[in-house]
Length: 395
Image (tube, rainbow, N blue to C red):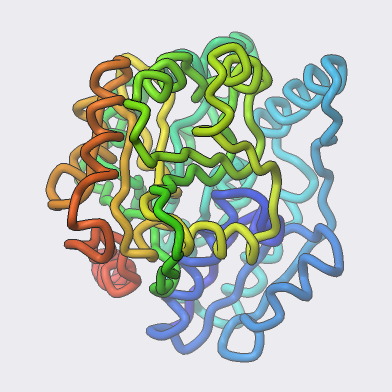
């Protein structure tokens, strides 16, 4: 079988969704004779990092593209938001070229399926240009647009542009042969905002990287690590007040790798808990994995929301280490449902008391490593099986 994948942001491996696209492609390398990937060109170094893909049965077609600026001041942030949203409302030059290339490749190679991975929505825009849509599988890694997301993610949505974006999503749902979501909660949110034939949908959970062996440390601390951005949406003060309430003899140290909301740093100083909270900053992927391997447990934080329509890709990444995972999330979230099914993994809501309780329990448990891993939920074999079933439905 031959497969075509359209994933605009694949080469930008700083992006979590791009990392998931890569894990997805690597999982399918083992079951497809050939995989062609249409993506957007970033830098030569980005392309070189993925050279290993083309040594096997994958060919990358990286097309010139316009990218959103990365400035950090308020004006740049506003410009970036407008630019990003406009690119998701009107077909970009990259989407047009990608769609035309997909048609040319399909004529020559007669793919078993063509999968578009969004976000960004531009990948689906390329799919809308396909001439043979009977092979098209549209995968939504997250809900879109921002206006259908729960607060705080919809706080700054732009009504007129969101209406245009919803039109693009509805066309994608209507015209694709099959539509895939990462979890049932995400599909339910889409169903509340779009007309969807549920019979043409299915669930494709994220794909975990290969298993990673944890490292032992000689100190007596209990280190729990959060990797990734602690953004405005994910920051909430109760976490730090809960850390403050830990007993003096507790060995818990919470470390954060990546961007941390400035208010979190100020709060740690105000509460005088610098001995329990460590902000490490941005690290390379190699150094991040090393820090995770040295940890005793891993921390997942979801924003406080009325509903939980996401399955964080971080959960799949964490699962590769076989360490206990503590998730601060909603009771009915996909993360809670998965973690609560496995002994040795922990969840809580956002109250100070519940967070302190779990931090105490996880740090004193005798089942700290490789205990009933959730890895099987994200195993690449499940991804392979799911896609094989989807292609059988197309044929």
